Image (cartoon, rainbow, N blue to C red):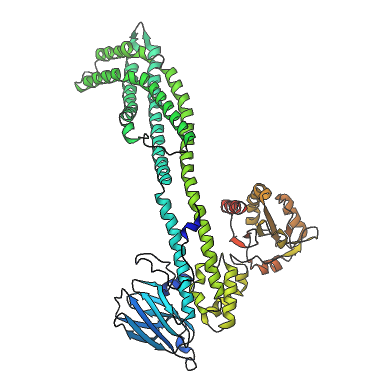
Length: 594
């Protein structure tokens, strides 16, 4: 399955077809609420504070398809208060505005939460067509290079989501996926039902064993010894009732299994080995159940007859008579007890087959689930290829317009944690042109803050400090490896308690490309060295400037408490912070296997 099949449009074509009205679009396009969501910070400012007198007027002519609006306001797109810069009545499905505003992002507000973001560039004569039922999409635009770029980036972002959704839709109805998902669910229930039946039957065999045991000690010449009458009557009564209860689920199973667990339908081609195991499982299951039918099953008519007689005696208040108990117990001894001989061997045969059958059932469950995973993997590959392609195209568009304020509408499609380099490049470019823009300035300040330099997604700042032997070791020398940067100290109890977990992970994944770079906040070299040896921290990358909380490395990474860890990927990018135990091992395993 190739991702290319889902890519069937021209990115730069300004006249692309209008998608269907009900096609969902990415929520981050052309919405003030969504600007908040993706980090275009709400700042206390008012666009009227810009000097407007020097700006050339912008003329805006908008045509609305499927129009149901009557009025529109042009307002600021962000800020703690709303300022209206122009209003227009919508007549004959169109409106015009002439505004003198600085180059920035604004909002067309049609009321009732219906809004659309646009960029005003002084001096432009903008002609736009919008769909009133999908304001996130620009149908056509002319007279504005910036809004043309917005249209193309919006289309890329929207088509990226639609194409991915189409892959998911095809996966949902893929015949093999549907078949194996259904098979896995039904067979798993089938297996669980058989396990439950096994447990009932094994209890039933146990009931028979108990009856056989006490009668084998009490029966002489076909009759129960007088002294054992009461005990035999009690045991036989209780265990025969329990045997009936334990056998009933199996009897119900035998009656209904073909109706509830029918696997006789059409089989998928290419899975001959799987069906061979499945057929063997069903054959062995039938043979196992035949053992129960030929042993416990043959006892049940007589068991029911004896229990009916006993219940009748009890109902008529005749059970307490010794003669009636003796008569009933001797019926058990003569009519049922001889048939119990050999049941133990049948139970053993049943158990032996059950163990093997359960192993085959587990294998079938696992394989049917694996069959689902194999189908999903094909679509996952197409998804990955498509997402990578569309992501690259959208990033290219953002970079190509990195000095245009419009990119702020799309930058946060890519979270900073995983795209720090892109954010830094774009904000640097915007800051060069819009140094006083509130959002740009805020992001510029964050980008150059100490916190940003060690945030998730950032390339880890290099460290170069001496090891216990005085040799300088550099963090950057481990580039190409997955690295745990671990700030600790010999005097830190929580650090020392976590060390065994770190050593265990190191032993498991070192050969797969995992390293530990330990930075000690010790002040005494001897204590530091003793702790390394005592905790068996066998990796070579141990460094410290022995300045405790004045550690230069700790200052670079903003470490104010320990233990403190940073997990770096093979490119040296910070991907996680302060993971412990199983969470740390899971993250390391995922990174080394990428």
